[in-house]
Image (tube, rainbow, N blue to C red; front, side, top):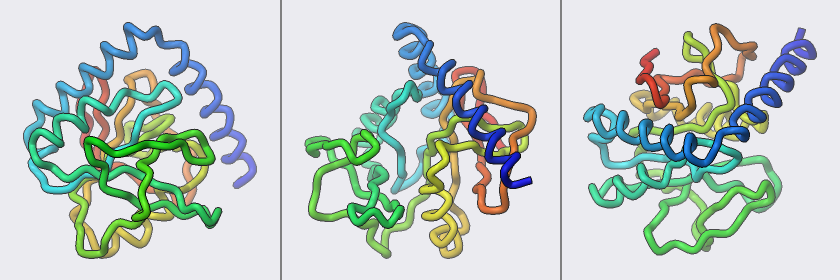
Length: 198
């Protein structure tokens, strides 16, 4: 069964990523703008002190407008960074307006800094998560590295109020997804068409 689930996930990732990369720049910009507007309109989402959010790539919805808004509102904004020691660990680093970015070993932009840890005394209120697909039940299909799942497994034990919000396009929604015991579920998803709460 695990091999079958792995195969299903792999096929789904390929299919949806292809679809995502086929979006025209006009549609990408339009959908990203609609997602941003839904987030800002949902007052409870950004009524917080600290958020974590990804820097977009691979056709994902653009997150820069959300980040800019948070900076304007004085919301501390953190982005994921991968450990340099190849330990497959991920944490979050505060992202400032004038930060220098570099690409990690997966080609994903990260802030360039000596500091690479989320300080223990900082409590994240929301993690906006990238995803390849999501289900109507709140399941999330990521890229397959398990970085978010590993980080959140321990972090969420001491931060039980943490909201896990996916950012996606409507076509990434599925009725059901193949899942495994370690897959972290979502609190909600924002698409260009709807704000889902699970």
